Image 1 (tube, rainbow, N blue to C red):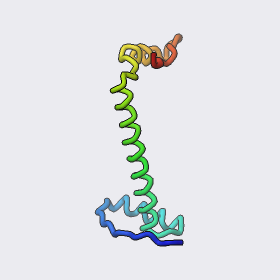
Image 2: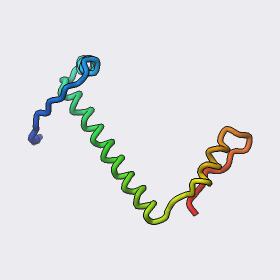
Image 3: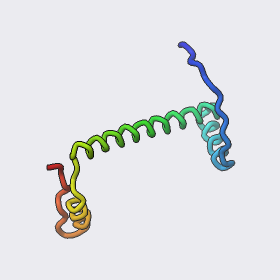
Length: 91
């Protein structure tokens, strides 16, 4: 398996979080660095997905693919009542 190049990144983290990382590393029998790399990878993936979804939503708005506020508010207000409305859909 080919090794990828790496770079050391230093970060100051609160002691309680560092303790949790140490506990996880011990429990999983992995290094502290492995735990941090897994967490950072998951966070980066999450942020990339959030960015993609935001761009997609902005494109929908620009194209007029939106549901008006009044329809959404009426639906939300109906939730928890005896007669909830169906969720609004795009026209």
